[in-house]
Image 1 (cartoon, rainbow, N blue to C red):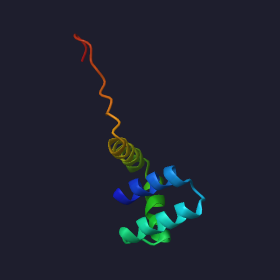
Image 2 (image 1 turned 30 degrees about the horizontal axis):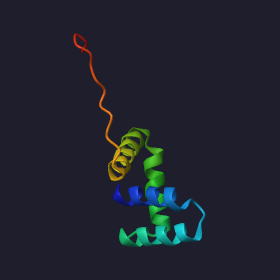
Image 3 (image 1 turned 90 degrees about the horizontal axis):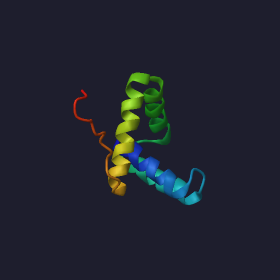
Image 4 (image 1 turned 120 degrees about the vertical axis):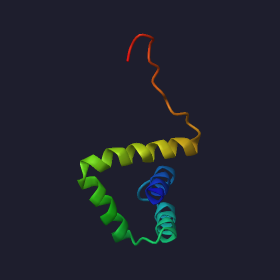
Length: 82
């Protein structure tokens, strides 16, 4: 998940097609021991599994929010409701 989080952050910072973004993404993949093809294959495998994809996406979003210092929203239950 860490590699995916970093790749998402790089995309947000540099955009999808910028030369600097491509260089930084290459370094992230190298850091985690992935080739571009291996990373895409692993991502595609998750995308194809609906039961795993949504929890994975939520975990990625929570991690990015925590890195940005965005507090997690916790729903408040009103008294008398369960």
